[in-house]
Length: 178
Figure (cartoon, rainbow, N blue to C red):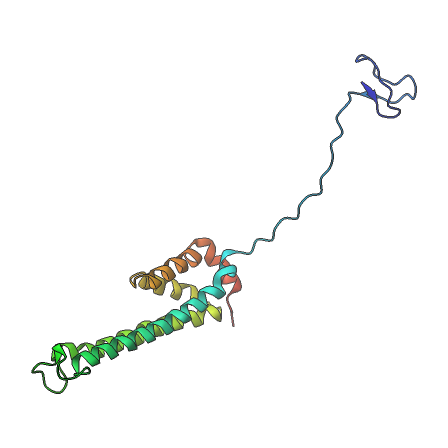
């Protein structure tokens, strides 16, 4: 046992120091105190990813427009003798080439405009923090899962950020309520 007042050592059965009169306690090792590390500030998932998600949706909309225009150009070249008279698709089909191939042009144009418009609309709603942006993004994110590679990746990222129930409360907190 050790006296905390004067540091004198005593037998285990002594309760008070004979030198200074302080209570005697068992010797305890001195622990070094280390400074505590500051806790990192955790930014909620939605707030952390909403800007990137909105930007990616806008870029995906531009990609859909460019891809659709390229598809229409290729289809038009194939159906309207774009590569000269020896092109294999130019046989006996009149001025506009094969009628069944030419009939796809309006469908490709409508599909391109609708899907690119939805992607740009979602990007805008997320970037401006509209209250209905989360719901719209989830619905269009599910539709984007069907577009291989980029659409699937963006759909999964959108659902990962916005679909959990905790994300609804986070998004409502940062949504523009005006």
